[in-house]
Amino acid sequence: MTRTLLALSLSAVIAFSASLPSFADTWNQYGGYGTENFTYRYDYDGRFADVGAGDWFYPSVVYTYELGLMRGKSDSEFAPGGSVTHAEIIVLLARLYAIYYGYGDGFDQGSPWYQPYVDFCAGHGLISGEGYDAGWLGSPAPRSWVIGTLYSMKDEFFNDEINSVEDGAIPDVSIGGEYGDAIYAAYRCGIAVGSDQSGTFFPDSYVTRAETAAIISRLTDAGLRRTVTLRLPEKTAEPAGGRIDNTVVDVPAGASIETMIDACRLVPTKTGYTPLDDAVEKLFGEIFTPGMKTSEKVKACYDWLIENCSYGSSGSFDHMSILLINPYLYPENGGYVRGGTTNYITYDTAASVRCAEALSVSDAMSIFTDRIGVCDNWSSAFALMMRAIGLPCTPAACQAKNGNSYGGHLLTVMTFNGVDYVFDPQIEQVIADSYGYCYYGRYGKSLESLGDRYIDVKIDQMRDIFGEFRYDEKAMEQAVAGASGEAFGGGWDFFLDGSW
Image 1 (cartoon, rainbow, N blue to C red):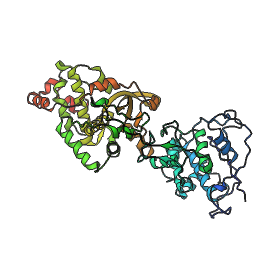
Image 2 (tube, rainbow, N blue to C red):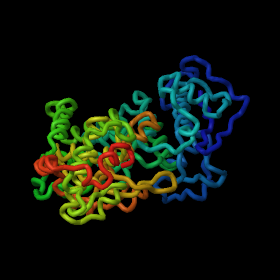
Image 3 (tube, one colour):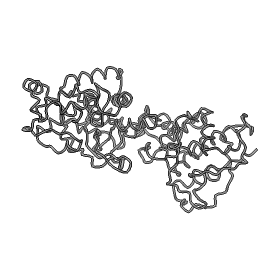
Image 4 (cartoon, one colour):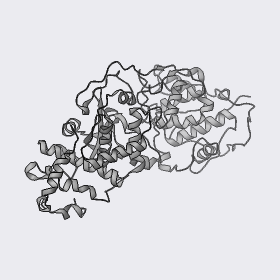
């Protein structure tokens, strides 16, 4: 018996009919289950003016339209570049599952409109069904989340590997990262093959309607799947030595961030401030395991910050003593820098550079003592942990986008093969709190790929300032002996009353 498919609209409003029957909780209502239940229902007559026969997505749009799985934004417009929301993907997931298993022809209309689909998917273990507010459901869905969500039907659609894709070979997807298993499975099954010759996935980009049509067509018809072969690049030479904050890794262009990190010749350094160096070493003993790759250690540090620290002002001032007695803060030695990350780049004397390094050592220490801090604290801590591992990491002042405006921010940057890669655990933690899971949208992403999220990034200037990233403990000990609160203008109370 031929299945009749209810058309799925991936527009903002999905039409329903009050006469649609509810799902009967019966098995194989139509005498079987599988992809054979997806049958043609409509004839595509070239109706969409914005879908040309030469477009890469043309076959997918025609296929999904004729099956009744996707319609246009209007009778004559498909809007291939338009985004798809989380709710619309959940609706699509519900229909794919229902059609595959022959549960029935339609859903009752709900309030809100997507609720029956959310309930259905949650009831069948496809999604958790919890924590989905209207704002999130109505927001555009990232490509990684879409593949991760569809992967809940892995036994139905992701079980026929046709491609050879080595672990770590997708340039911007870690096999152990969020949705990594799902994305690698999609590549190996030919459901996704990347957006360029190197197989780049762009996991944080919002999925478009054209991409959705391609994914759905490949899910439901194995004959439409794509072939790709991705292998890890061979390490051709020992990375160049030299200054740790600008190490060049000799690997092919397009290599994943993990590949570049693992290829790096490590040059571990300490700050010289014993309490901080000891705290970092102790943490490494807790979060590192024998045989860990360098890239896995980086991820462990990043995750530790996100999972154990919070945003806010430090509740303890014990570590501030290294600033109060800092010889580099004396006016005759160049003055002190504070009051915003952009102030770091306004001083170019040797004394002020040393002061900036001491400030970041102080900022990092607050993370290890209080587990709380602002962007200066988070980025300083992450950069110093990376330096302790031996990687070329540098804090960088910038302007970060917040809604429609920008504000001063401090992130961290590693440079490989002449490309600057961003690591921003503090903003990552804010996003994780909002979504309920770590998005890894600011982890090892090229600065260019992040678009206008960051502007006016002072990488070269900050690299010069944080060359050695050390703290002169002997100079500090000498300063302690002759320190006087009056030497700092307002005295110690100025710093300890929270106004500093």
